Length: 344
Image (cartoon, rainbow, N blue to C red; front, side, top):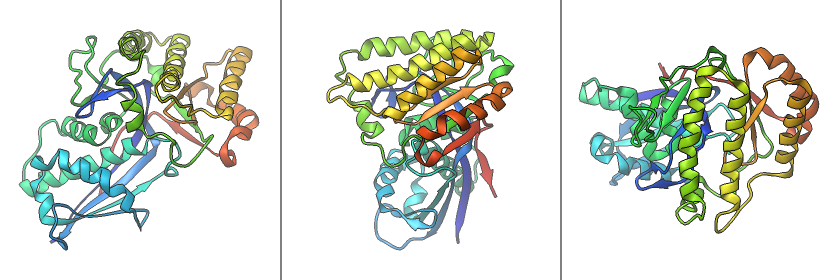
């Protein structure tokens, strides 16, 4: 008998950044993100007749090609939830996955990939145990967190918040929640153009980067700052003040990279073209007065954030002024999305 579950789960882009963690995948500070729409992972998990006498008889394929290098991270994830999915050890586990964006393009494939995997396994648990799981997405978020912290936020659409925070009573370090605060309509259809300055694997993994916060001289102040900025962002989301939103989001992005540049060992993930783009964005905003802002993940690529109403002007600006800074002139046009979808 073959059992199968398939989900499409999106990536997300953090506005308040999570950087630093404790075992097991507990965030050192709260974060909040926009869930994306067009940057997603489609994952199918099949339970087949077991072939090997091992705890996890595992096969992982990306776009139909075997990826042995994915196995260690997935095996570690399965170990975290082993007691809740004992049935997995009775089968040959085939995981087939596909990204809508180039792998290692600086988009959070771990967020979309691990959230999709968690959703597939939770659906299989419901089917095999003939039960309906209460708070399905909250449980999926808890599982996804154990594979990738940012994946906890990808199981929801729109704005998602993760990490204990005094200003949100239901917030938790164990799972993310959909943001329930007052949100001005301008943020519902926000755009995110992902500018691909560099593709390929990051020089420093996120896991290693988080680890460097343990003895970072500015860590405690940064963690406190994240709480302060999240409180300020709540007010901004409610008021629709785009200028204050942009100041907060850009400051968070630059602070994230400042933490990397002042850790020991230190490292710089921005590239010269990253800096050129930031300067071009500032100049464009000063010249036009239009609400175009940037954020960065732990890499060289730039996310341009802006309301739907100015998309035509931003698209022209990107095409005429920014593509020369990009790898093969490539960028991805995305927007705030509705969250994961179960596939037939």
